[in-house]
Image (tube, rainbow, N blue to C red; front, side, top):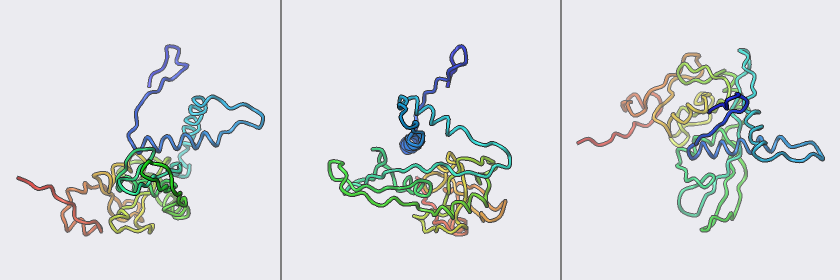
Length: 229
């Protein structure tokens, strides 16, 4: 990010990886669709509307007593071919990445044929009910990763991933900042373990360093060890 000489315009350029890029695009498009012009007025240029959407996302109440807020939930269309990996915005995704977004987005499955043309569109689903999501946010109040105190843009994380036998019970859920969520299992190397119902009941550990007994203590499968020698 760089300002011009008069500090009147901030020039922004960057790159976002696969799923984060798709989620960013979906969120900005969603906000743009919400900021329609008044009846009879012309639409602004798409670039201007995108810039306005970023402004809307940046405007948040930063008062200390402001209630924690969840990250926006864009609709992510997951294209599921008859064979091969599922994709979001044309990006092949692993099961771990799909699990990461399933609790924080509205998922719309789209069955496609060999040429990528939609054959059938499934029902949009919320993996976690809004009521449970609100309960987790009110209980946690901020990101539960380490000493992070961020209170906005929070996502719901399964301490024990659903694909590893975890449930949607509130005792298996914690609010985490979106950037931290990507570092947690099953996609990342860190595990958030402990009792989320206690104020200081969670801590972060490297999943691949856990012994089989430690992993079982937290309800996790033993990590796979790379062969040596």
